[in-house]
Amino acid sequence: MSFLDKASTVARPGYSKWLIPPAALCVHLSIGQVYAFSVFKTSLVERFDSSQTAVAWIFSIAIVMLGLSAAVLGTWVERSGPRKSMAVAALCWGSGFLIGALGIAIGSLPVLYLGYGVIGGIGLGIGYISPVSTLIKWFPDRPGLATGMAIMGFGGGALIASPLSNKLMSIFDSGFDPEGSGVASTTALTSTFVTLGVVYLVFMLVGASLVRVPPGHGDESTAVQHPGRNGALVRASQGIRTPQFLFLWIVLFCNVTAGIGILEQAAPMIQDFFRVGDESSVSASEAAGFVGMLSLANMAGRIVWSSLSDRIGRKPIYMLYLGGGLALYGLLALVGSQSVAIFVVLAMGILSFYGGGFATVPAYLKDLFGTLEVGAIHGRLLTAWAAAGVVGPLIVNGFLDAAGEPGSLVAADYYPALLTMVGLLAVGFVSNLMIRPVAETHFDDEAVKASDSRASKDSDQQPVSTSKGGNR
Image (cartoon, rainbow, N blue to C red):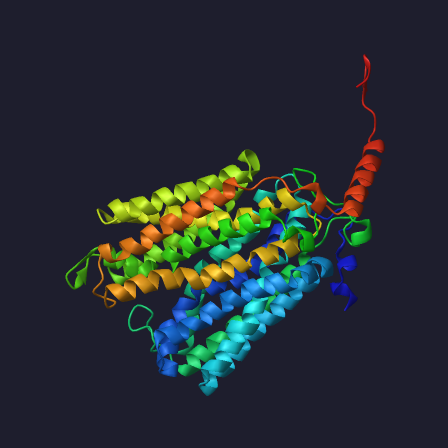
């Protein structure tokens, strides 16, 4: 098992750092399936003869466990290295599907909660953060681009998982029609979960085998650390005690809550906005296409906006995410019902900022705290995602439940929820403005000295350039 140890993953001469993003994508494209869980919702409601809320809890549990496992195991991920943590994530995510398949087969919803929700959710959390610090160490000069390339996969995983899941259920159940009732048999659901579990397990293990850490990072005692922009090298135990961490937690929570407000109700929302009487001018298939467009916007925002943050800085880009999102939400409430095109453009803009916020936050953490334990700090910050995953749907569904029954709602019924999101984004905008460089009292003195010593040694080893005028 020493193959999985951090010391065994040190890159040898000739290894290309451009293999790291594909290795990370193997993990993030796999765990991004969670955004496509809704394709099973109708069939699971039928299988367990339960409410939609009871089935929706499977997704909610997975997201909560993502945040909690990332927070609790972040330090272990940082110290164990990317290969071991990615392998553990693969085992949890794959076995989550297999245990979930058992729950479907025997008709036990609690077993499905345990499998996909709890165990699979742990795999989500470990898998999400495991490549992050490694990418930043390989691309210290462009951390926004590096993390954007990987986290883009999480946003785009649903684009693969949704049609793949429907195709598998069609193969295992010839009577399944995703465009019709969308109800698959118990055998088809079970077989699809087993197949996905095996496929994702293999795919993620391929990523684990490819990943490497840069030379000098196999042992923390000799590791070459890359300080943040203010020279910070901070351990997780100190980083989470700073006001910077608190303000960034609020920023991420507000941004994610606002994005989930669109994602969670995307298909019915666009139909309700253009409903006259009992009929909507947007069909079910068109609404499904809209969900796909939102996934593309989510994915594109993760690479485009995070790459832009390398040029303009992390605080300015979050001013764009939060201030721009605030304006787009306001416009959605005011003019979103005037035309489908306007609605789609505004919603895609909101989702691009949602995705960008996820992809940029590891680089923001690197700037503030350095890379000493950035993965562990990132894991703790993701508790904001877990909280938003519960609060966001509660806000939207609370207003909608008070407004009327599904199928009878109109654009005006969404206005209170949309305006609440405007207020949340304003809170996030102010919190972002409050973020300042971390005080030196939180720095790890030994890590800073080691970094300074290595930087001085590397400088002394650089060849001296000469010209006719003498030494440069």
